[in-house]
Image 1 (cartoon, rainbow, N blue to C red):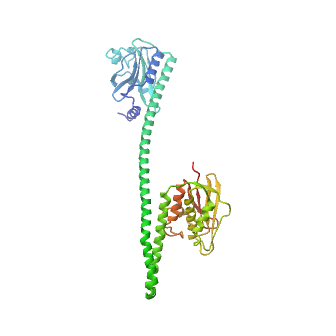
Image 2 (image 1 turned 180 degrees about the horizontal axis):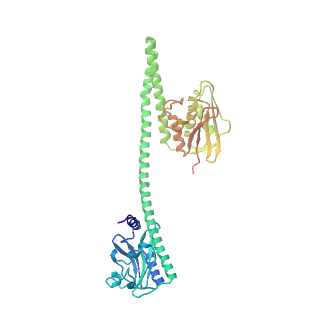
Image 3 (image 1 turned 60 degrees about the vertical axis):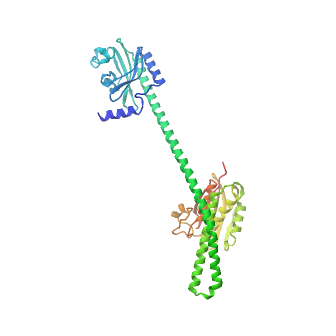
Length: 409
């Protein structure tokens, strides 16, 4: 078998028409062909590896026959319309069993090839009669048109099957994605609960350790040498860091585990509450609000926490060589209000900005060392509001963190 024939058969089998019943439209085209040619018998022939399959017929009962016995198999590969007045007189067909009487007594014979859009001949639209006959040029043109209609119906059938397969695959993937999302949500919920429980349950023993270290320092510090007192101080600082980390973990868990209850919220009031909570840490820093802040649809508690974390982060990144200045602004954009907390601190290298909000990521050069849970919590709060958070460089040096809290749709 030649490579061309293998390709032709592959193209044929893509249509899934062999050994399949012809639909009403194909049957209608064959009936029209009989009327156009003015003959009593018409067949739609498909030729595969070994057979001629008569998909639908007019004037006789269709059947399959060997490809070697097919009249159409002799000429269909040419891709040309074949028109024979009397097949007994044509050397290509004179000995064919469809002419000799073994399978039929065909005299007049004409066939329009069925050629795929890729140029592969698939079979023929064949009109014939037991009496010699001829076709006019107009009849031949119409039969060619009907052959094209048949190919178009094949193509539509194939596309419908592909669409059904694609729809089934899409539905399968959608179901798998739904399961994956549900599993991820369940896993995230368990992790949030674990973080909350762990940080809450660990807070008590950490407080006990801190209290005993303080008592040890107060009661026996004067009896210990400098090295022992240094060890107590180091342990106390480690306990304080652990306590801060546990509180941050608990805050992170709360930010993702609760319900976001949105209502009109004054950003200025939320900022004032956040600054009140940070008043001791703000010593030596100046927080300015150059323009009035808007009212946004937000969860008031989460918005206060978001602003508090961003201002606190700016405080941690202050530069020792100049006073810490923090500006909170809001600008209306096409996406809604963009709130910005800008500082004049150490800044963040561009290569670190994409991972700034990842939890437990240490910066190589960024002055904020440690867990970054506060910024990860900020991202959770913004995402809970279906918003966006990102960072840029403050003109003149420092970091600007921007976020949007779009209205509920």
